[in-house]
Length: 128
Image 1 (cartoon, rainbow, N blue to C red):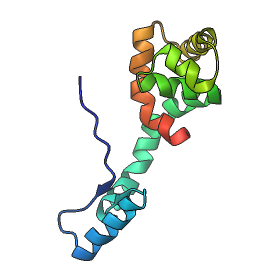
Image 2: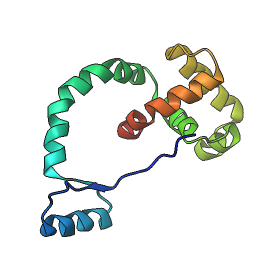
Image 3: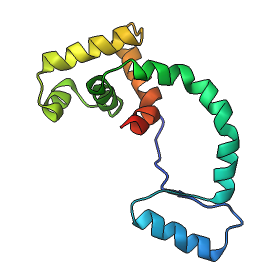
Image 4: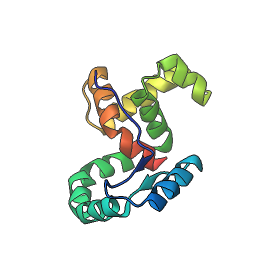
């Protein structure tokens, strides 16, 4: 199982000391910081990335808000009872949402659902 690391900031190796302080301020304020050098590189790749992920984004748009919330909870490895408690719904309703998600995303089994949820997790975070 691969560990996941959440990055709050990124500095280019040739950063100025003032940029370090600004980065720390941003992170302490609850925001993320990306160095201008990396940001410009990401912006140039954005067009290619958007084309690559367009089918994924279209699939996510087919889901209701609640289905996205359930899928996000599945990506966090929450159990059906935990998801039911989180959203004040029954376990049967959670299972109905799972079934709807699987149908809309053309998923054949629960293991594939978990795999897809983990793959889509970054997109689900943005959609929230």
